[in-house]
Every structure is written in structure tokens, then in C-alpha cells.
Image (cartoon, rainbow, N blue to C red):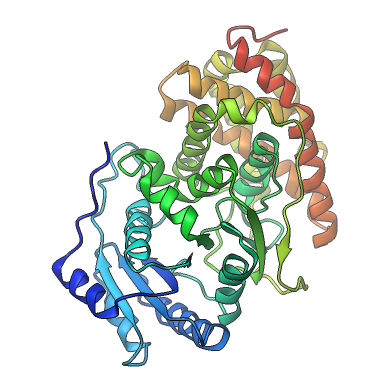
Amino acid sequence: MQQAVVLPASTLQALEQVGEADIVIGIPSFNNAGTIGHVVRAAHAGLTKHFPNHRGVIINSDGGSKDGTPEKVLENLPDESPVLRVQYPLYPVHRLSTPYHGLPGKGSAFRTLFELALKLGAKACAVVDSDLRSITPEWIELLVRPVLEREFDFVAPYYQRHKFDGTITNSIVYPLTRALYGKTIRQPIGGDFGFSRRAVQHYASQDVWDSDVARFGIDIWVTTQALCSGFNVCQAFLGAKIHDPKDPGSDLSAMLAQVLGSLFTELEKNAPVWRQVRSAEQVPIFGFRFGVATEPVAVNVKRMLDSFRLGSQGLAEIWGLILPPAALLELKKIAQLPDVEFRFEDELWTRIVFDFAVGHTTRVMERENLLRALTPLYLGWVGSFVLQMKDAGPEEVEQRLEALCLAYETQKEYLISRWQWPDRQGA
């Protein structure tokens, strides 16, 4: 059974002074002194401009920053602004040998924010990342208004991103979530969300907060829970998400393992739900959709393809425990292609993701090793995607990703078959 959140005495005192709130804006943070001031100012302006007749409270849930992040919160708010500050305990990251590439203990921050929102009686709650450079006051309106005025329970972000940014989302998280749960949530792990009181009550009551999903995959968890719990869901077009993009071919093995570990764990838990879903429904998008400039992402295709080829040589035995012989043969053929002809077909890639999901569930090997073994395959697909889309515009890229999503949906029967008979790999 989950244990109650223990709040510091200073937070309880501040909570008593605030009393009640209609809207809560939560900002989890950890060493974000360089950006959190902008985020706080945008959140305050959004509440003041768009919800002047509602009592709003900003809550900074900090994970023990050493760079003055909590002080920056107060410096960037007017003295009379209702604000709560609380530090949440950091979970030790011990399951993976590589440090967690993200906000430590973010799930604990979410739990604290949810508990405080309930104590304040909030009708709507939004959570935004503390490292954003592109947030505007309109983000607050777009994440909150569908909850207050349109009775939505869950608002997911919809960003405009560079075509080579967010490749884990584009190649696996978005198309797999869409195929599994039948909703076109474009950014399932976006990080910026809106919640109704009903949703907050549901999340706070779940016995998940001491698990790896809460530690490493809170974003995909809140999205999956919304889709599996009958919540009324929508999306908010927020424009560009400016953060610190990385070459998708560098330093991602741990990140991939953490994201997919959470995604596959939720897939296993929710099998009775997704096995009944046969098609995807469009999810409404609020906000004016417009073209925005995005920061370029440098990619090193040669390094991606070299990693794939090295993997095909050194990981063949491990892949053989997860993938059927036909897939191994196709991968061997692809590895022999020169760079200019390199192509990784969507149908093969989709079946590989499904095979790894089944292998994760049946524990054909230690899960961390299984997830890391997917990295060279992922880089092979991304390398192929970059070669195909290097001269493409945003509309063409979205059409290409739509084709990938349809491949996931078409191949879903393969997943269901493997799920029912995991030992029957086929020819």
C-alpha cells in the first residue's frame, strides 16, 4: 500500500495561509536556475491575463537544487503572488549504470503537486517543465481552459519540433501509444500537461509512486492512465518547444532504456485494454496551429549506421533470443547495404519493437540488457529516416510519420499473436 506524502512544516504553514485555489500551476525543478525565472514569469502572467477571476497558485516542487533554483522562483514573482515551495526526496538512481538523463525524482514531484492541488481544492492543475525557453503565458491558458470550460480531464501538449528532434517519440512512443490505445496523442511524453480534479484524484490514489515507472517514466504513465481510465482527453498546440536538443545518435542508451522500460511496463499492465482496440481516433487540438521556427538538430548519420552494423555483428546472439529468424535475416541484409542505399522498412521496424515488448514481458533476459540491445536497431531506423527526410519539409515529415503509425496499426495483429503465443516466433 502506498504511504502518504509527508509535507514539510513550512509547506503546511504556507498551505494554510493560501487556503484555497481554483488553479494550480506546478513546476518541478532540479538545478534550473538559468531557466526557471522565465517559466515562473510566464506562468504568473498566464494566470493574471487569462484567469483574472480565478484564484491561482504556483507550486515549485524542487528536488534539492544546489544552484539557487528555489530562490529564483521568489525573485521572479511579485510579493503578493500565492506561491508554495516544497522539496521532494530524490530517489537514488541505482537500476541503471548510466546516470538518469532527466529530472531526478520527477514522479515524486508530480505526486507532491497532485496532493497539494487536492488540499487546495483546485478545479484544474497544469504542470510545466522548468527548463523551457519557449513557454509563453498562452501555454497556461491552453493547458487549463479546456479543463475549466470544456470538461476535459487531460490535456496533452502538441509541439512543433525540428524533424530530427524527439526521435524516440517519433519512432516508438507516439506510434506505439497510438496503436495500443487508439488515440492520436502526438506527444505522449511531452512533459507539459493539464489535469482536471478528477484526474488528479485518480493519479494521487494509484500505488505506483515507489516504482521505476514513477522514477523514470512519469510522463508516459500519466498519458497512459488517461487513455486507459476513460478520461476525456485533448491536446493543446503550444508552438515550438525550445530546449537543449541532442544529436539522436549520441549518448542515448540509458534514456532509451528508461523511456521504453516504462512504456513496455505499462503495455504489460494494460493488455486487457489495448487488445480490444482496433483503430485510432483523432484527439481534438486546441489553439491556433501555425508554422514556427525550430532550432536545428545536428545529426551524424554515419555514426548511427556504424552503430547499427556493429550491433548486427556483436549482438546477433542476443537479438536471436528476441527476434524470429526471418527478422534476423532481413537485418543481416540491411547491414550490408552501402550508406546511400540504406533503408530500414517500417514493417520490419514495427515488428522488432513488438518483439522487444514481448521479450520485456516474458523476461527472456535481464530487462536492462534487453532494452540496451535495442539501441543499435533504433539507430538503424533513425539513420534511414534521416537519409529519407534530409530535404523534406515539416508537412512531408508528418506524412512520413503518419505512414509509420499506420504500419504500427496494421502490424498490431502480429503483436497480439506474439502476446498470446510468445514462444511461437514464426519463420
